[in-house]
Length: 125
Image: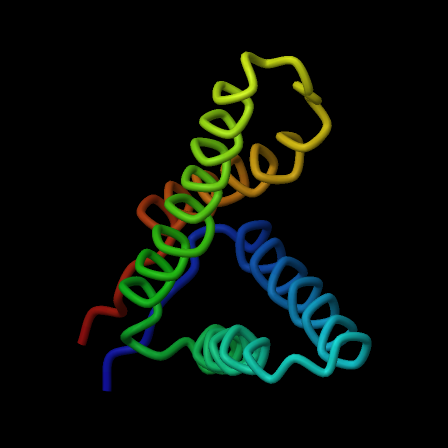
């Protein structure tokens, strides 16, 4: 079985900290809200943590798909939705702080996507 290789230890630890932080946040949210739909992101994050730790061969494509869907497309849709909502009220109730979290997530998503492309390779047999 081919394994994945991290060229950068910093990126490896960045991914671990990011996924553990998101996992703690989602577990906290499920405890507070009792919303079982939060279980899906928890399972995805546990899956990603597992394949990162064992450095499975599907790591690169899994991280690219996850970062593209959950960290790039979803925050962009949130930003566009908020901009359209503000536009419908002629920007009378415009608040910049509601855009900060989606923008941070978008930046993290671009970092993860780019870092995955540049720093993860498959082991040569």
